[in-house]
Amino acid sequence: MWNKLKPGNLFFKLLGAHLLVVVITLLAVSLVFSYLAEEYFFSTREWELASQAEKVAEVLEEELRLENHEQVEKMASALAVSMNLKIRVIDAMEGRRGEQIISVAPIEEEEETQLGLEQREVEYVLQGNSYSKKVFGPEMQRLLVALPVFQEEDGEGDSGNPADVIGVITVSAPLTGVQATVAHLSRLTTYSGLIAAAVAGVLALSLSKTISNPLRVMTRAARELVGGNFRSRINVTATGEMGELAATFNQAVDEMEKTVEEQKRLQELRQNLVANVSHEFRVPLTSIQGFAEAMLDGLVEEEEKEKCLRLILDNTFYVKRLVSDLLELSSIESGHIQLQWEKISTSRLMDRVIHSAQPKAKGKNISLEYEQKHLPSYVEADEDRLFQVLINLLENALTYTPPGGQIKVEAREEEDNIVFMVRDSGAGIPAEDLPHIWERFYKVDKARNRAHKGKGLGLAITKELVHLHGGEVSVESAPGKGSTFYVYLPQQQDEKA
Image (cartoon, rainbow, N blue to C red; front, side):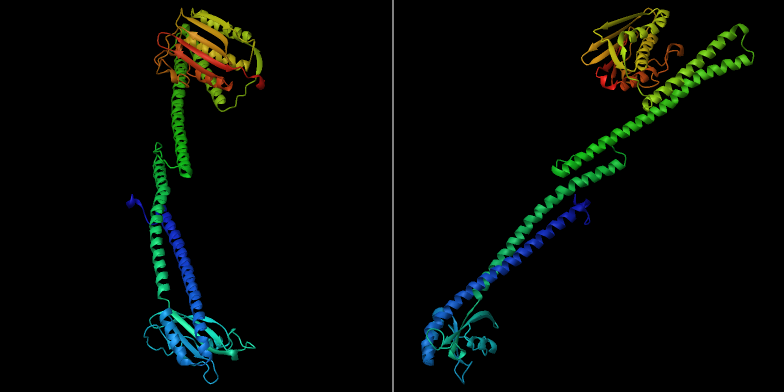
């Protein structure tokens, strides 16, 4: 699969987009979480250190008021060791304002030249304000808190002005523990982000394949379709939009295949139609031409001329009927024929049909019987077109029924249909020919003499006319057992009248 994928295709675009969104989201969450964690731990440590600074100030302020610096240093040293703090005391008295009095640490440290506070920050605390900051040393960061010490025990002088501040106490502690905790949380966040990114990558890979694979299958099927393979289908088990898209594609291919097959069938029918029409016209026209030329050349005896003229006339009538049938079939199929709906007497229609076919039946010594069972008095239809349907079926039966045979015509009511039936005792139709007898110019016995066969258009016209009435036609036949044709017309025709 991978060798078919290119960096610019949909799979990599989806995968890259998902991973990019995941990475950016995790990075933003990690940064925000690290910042909030750092702020939380620094704020907590600052609050703890401020509380410790207040305790140191409470212990040293009495001796600082008495200016007992030696005692202040002893007590500050003890506090520095017990609290693990670095303590400085700054003088605020006139002449020594801002000078460091004491600087003690829990362990021996190299003396720093800076107090950790800038002059402006010292002045700010000497104004009676508390102050805290981070101090960046050469090896580590420290958190420093500075508190003023007032002359009076209640924390302020009589007027609360800066002159009441007698000193400043600063305490500082390394931030190693806080930094280690923050660093540990950062590592955990990073590891969690990497794991989440890996899981998201797997999910993105799966999702990208889920989306891109059906599309790739559809693309391949579409290319095969362009190449003329209309049997290509998509076997996609995906649900949702992808499943619907695959099903729609398959449905479109099915419809296209049907359309192509129908076009091929129509093309074949057109070709067959041209060939059949040419053949049907060529034979009678050749006959007409031959007899006419023979008469003009004086090759026909006087007593034979009437016979030749009769043959010419018969062939002319045949060509005329053929043209008329072709035009009628074309008009029906193109929708140019409009039925004249009316309520017609069923018995009168059947009498008309039987009366019209009786002479030909007697001429061939064929018994023509008519039977009606529970037939409605009226039927909604176009009388002339329905008459044409029944006459076509009767003429077809008379053509293929040998002398001495029987033809039975029946009309009956069956459920919601009026059924007309024409049964003959002819040779029957082979099973392989039954699906094709409704096609134009199709003849079951292709070797039969022209004088004893039809034009191959009667059944095609019959089928189209029955469909115009909203009905159906069918046939039952077997070699040696005759044929039975059925016409089913629905009785719900009152609305069309």
